[in-house]
Length: 252
Image 1: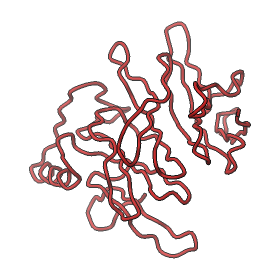
Image 2: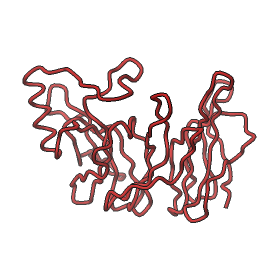
Image 3: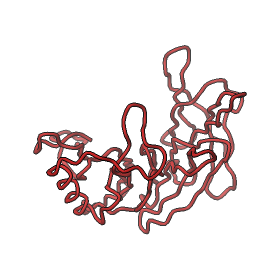
C-alpha cells in the first residue's frame, strides 16, 4: 500500500508491483484509505480492509459523506459505545470493513455493519480465495472486548465463529498453504493476581478443537506463519531483546 499522488493528503491505496520488474500501478482505493491487505499466491481474490462511515450505504456514498464533512469542516465524532480511543488517537467516526477485491478490480463489502468488531485489521485469506479468517472483537464483562476468530465467506459474506476462548484473546490468524488449518496466537486475559501469557495454537478445520503448540515454551510469540510446504510454523518472539524467527513443526 502507498499513497496516491492526486490529492493534497491522499489516503493509502493498494498497488501492485510486477514480480518481473517494472512500474507499480494502483489496483484499488477507498475514500478513507486501505489499511491492510491479505493477498495469497495464485488466489483469484485479495481481501483488503478499510474504514467506512457508519451511515454510508456504499463506497460512493462514503466518499460523498467524507466530502461533506470536509467541506463543512466537521471534525466531531459521536461515540455510541466502547472503546473511544486507541493509544493517543480517538477512534471513529468510521468503522473498519473487509472487502473482497476480485480480478475485475471491484471491491465488495463482505463485512457490513461491523461496529468495533474488526478494530485494527488482522486477517488471513485461504489459498483458493474463498474465505478469510479474521480477528473479531466481541463484548466481554465490564465493558471490555475480547477477540475470537471469525470465518468470513468472501463470496457470500456469511460469518461463523470458529474459535472462541472466554479467558483469552485469539489473534494473528494464518491459514495453512493447503487451506485445511489455521495457526494463531492466544493471549490469556490478565487479572490482578496473574499476568497474561501468550502462546501459539493450531487448529484443523475438520478435526475439532484447537490445541496449543509448544505449551511449555517460555516466550511470547508475536506473529505466526507457515512454511511453503505447511510442515512447520514460523514464529517471531522476543528473545533477549532481538525478535528472531523460530520454527516449530505442526501437529497433524
